[in-house]
Amino acid sequence: MRVLYLSPSGGLGGAERALLEGIRALRSLEPSWTIGLISLDDGPLIRELRSHGADATVLPVPEVFAAAGESGRSRAATLLQLTRGAGPLAGYARAFRRAVRAWGPDLVHSNGIKTHVLGAWSQPAAPLVWHVHDYLSSRGVSARLLRHHRRAAALVLANSRSVAADVVSVLGRGTPVDTIYNAVDSGRFTPQGPRIDLDALSGLAPAGPGVVRIGIVATFARWKGHAVFLKAIAELSAAHRFRAYIIGGPVYRTGTASQVTREELEALVQTLGLKDRVGFAGFVEEPARAYRSLDIVVHASTEPEPFGLSIAEAMACGCAVVISDAGGAREIGEPERTCLGHTPGDVTDLARQVSRLLDDQRLRTRLGEAAGALVRERFTTRRFAESLRTVYARLASAHCRV
Ligand code: GLC
Image 1 (cartoon, helix red, strand yellow):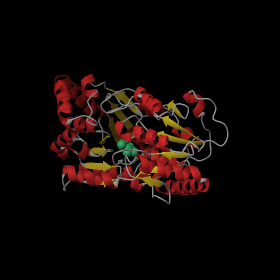
Image 2 (cartoon, helix red, strand yellow):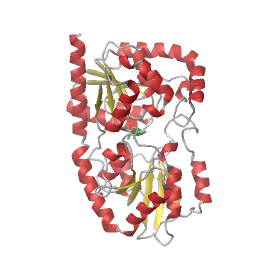
Image 3 (tube, helix red, strand yellow):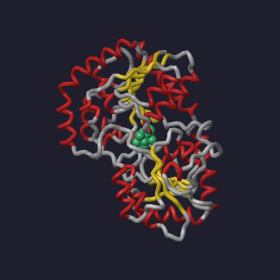
């Protein structure tokens, strides 16, 4: 079987890390399959996939299209950007179509909105799967484009039941949708193992013993709630011995409408008087090391989280996690049993939940242990790969019969 993946980004945001995990697991389940990837952008995803024997190609997309992104932008601004990109995009779409067809896939799996559309335009002689990682209803222009092309997709995969429901609401009742949860590699995301020195990485003086470390691990998308996190940290009682860390950075090329900048967050840290208590550790290549170095992990998304891979990874590493209690995040953690929850965007509620964990080491340990056990049972790479294999085999054989 020849499976061709299409990725809008070569960076390693959640959707790309989920894809990488799926491909790794599929490779060990079906070593004889040929795996290819066409990405619109170069980056660490390409290097990782090549190291796993995949045939990864970068077909650089015109800059104006690369920079187009709906999150944080008005519909008019998005349309304007797409209109500007229309000329160069037509030529690009032809080259993309040639590349897809020349690869000769038995199945095409697209991992993001831009390649869902390009994949539909390239009309491959093989079933096309759209893997949806985000809520389409919050992206009006993308939703319309995908609705227009929905018949091109033989199947839509959603990363949570919540996203699956959103797909149906946007693309219509007749849309074939399956939910496949992302996986966490239980060999790498373990409570025990190497850590990193978050203070050194952040340029802070060593914190000394007994300090509780609280972190947010996320890309710099605005809706990931870094500002909510910092404001909640500012509400914690100064009597607690803690430090907070911002781990991650901007991954996508969609600009400051949709992403916060480090300067902006640093200015907020200054305003809140948190300079000695908050560190910026930047992008960490091996996130498991970052999770193990934290006692409390905060998920602060201000909008419902489609899935929340970082939540599952932090839980696998035995961290006490506070989730933003909405959307797909609810399908991973169960507040009070495997994590704590707060109302999305509610600074005071978040501060209250973090305080509970700061005060109570036993609660942290209990939640962390239950969380680790849950992730190891429910989000295995084996289940992920088997689900993909089942779906691919079903679609490929249905396609042959037509
Ligand atoms: C996207 C979603 C995130 C999810 C990831 C992997 O980045 O925003 O919630 O964890 O995809 O599916």
